[in-house]
Image (cartoon, rainbow, N blue to C red; front, side, top):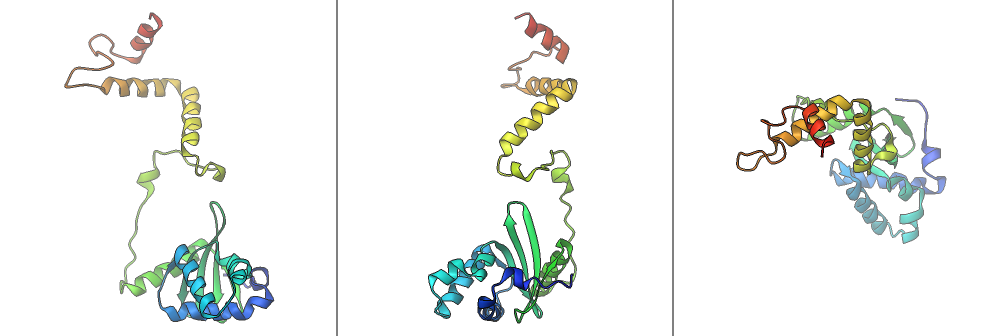
Length: 208
């Protein structure tokens, strides 16, 4: 955790009192972890209870900040926040319950606080370990966040690149794939007794 107070960069001075009241309002709900839709609904309920106009809900510094918050939950004398300022970019904050101090924390720190809250609610003492590596072991990694949401285009570019850089490997993979096609037992596309490997398939195609 850092010693830098980010309050001035996030919440306008004129909204500080409402911000403090909103944090108290969230903690009084005792609802635990709030996701994005819950946060928007809770803020709307707060504005209604405090007789705040629609302009405040949409354009106040509090509303603008909360609009991109994905996760929010109380934790002892703080409120923990995960915010997504833009696609595939996340920032994590620890907000003092009196609304007077906001500091940025790291992802591991956020996950530790979230785990502590979740397991405290469920009365579990042991943390489960989930290994997601097998799901990604043989898949291409998406390094450019601009490719998010364009999965088909990304895969087409990836496969085209692989076909040019490793033609023998991918030709064999293609041959193995079409050789498996059968209907009721007989082969549909390739007869193994006539064409036994990828080179023979290429020769036959060239003679057509």
